[in-house]
Image 1 (cartoon, one colour):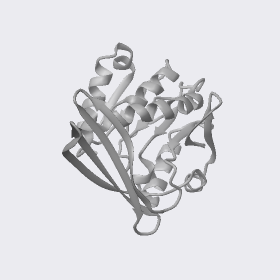
Image 2 (cartoon, rainbow, N blue to C red):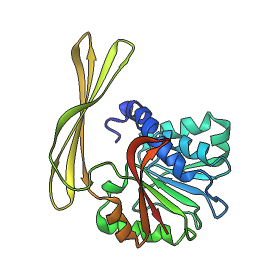
Image 3 (cartoon, rainbow, N blue to C red):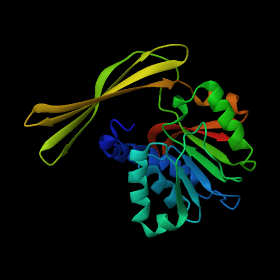
Amino acid sequence: YSTSAEFYELVATRHTASSGPPLTRVLTGLDVSHGPVLEIGAGTGRVTEVIAAALPEAEIVAAEPSATMRAMLTSRVARDPDLRRRVTVVDGAAQDLVLPERLSAVVIFGVAGHLTVPERVALWKRLADRLPDGAPIVVELMGVSSPRLIPPVMSLRETIGRQTYEWWIGGEPTEGDAMRFTTTWKVLRDGRTVREVADSYDWHTFDVARLAREAGMTSRRITEAGGRPVPEIGVLVK
């Protein structure tokens, strides 16, 4: 994400507005006495704030492998006295992350599809060894359960100062369960494109039932919060 990290907050703001309420619904009232809550792929810290608000007594470990994103995450944590007291920011990708010995819950948003099936299976095992019975692993489902063609579409348009920012995203099947997503940020001024930043990544598609089979856990989907439909979130329960 380092290539387009300068634009990430534009997406994260909207993302948190839609995914924050269902995550709060899952976490509220959770027993956090067993250990910290682990967030894998914390990005710039928007979801970290949601976790902290839902669990005001929890210690949080926020892991982010991108140095650019981690700089914004650390800045967000450092300027908030409550987050500064409770959130530990660490480097590390999901595959090789050094885990605390005990965990109360895990939040994985925007990450699971970056891992192959064997990498996910290994991660679920490592997490299960540290979670108590009944503890949740909350996973963002991303709405793509199998490879398919997604023509490029403008997913976001925001204006800051004299410039307008457009985010275009599309995807196509590659091999097996994978898709290749291509994103392009267009920066416009006076109706003219002055800069474009493109990036691409592979995403291994899944649904919550598949994740549950990989993890040997039970699962459920969260599709609404406060009576309103929301982006799907999967909850794996040990």
